[in-house]
Image (cartoon, rainbow, N blue to C red; front, side):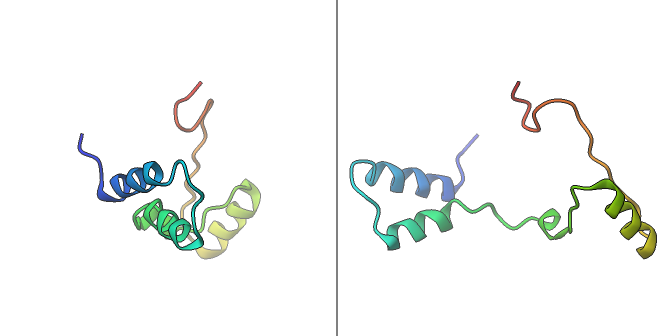
Amino acid sequence: MPMKPPLLAALALTSAFAAAELTPGQFQQLHQDLQPPHEAWTTIPWHSSLIPAQHKALAEGKPLFIWAMDGHPMGCT
């Protein structure tokens, strides 16, 4: 699987500045390169409490999606 350009840029910046301190400009560039790409799901107003989410869904006449699982969300146990 090929690496994405932002990841390559982040790796290059990280390795280039591993022995030196980052300047504020270098930090800003690294921070920008490490941001995830825009995804549609990031615009959804997620709620972490069930009851307020139920009330809002009911008031707006919208469905409620519940993601419930046991274990680490990344599969790391």
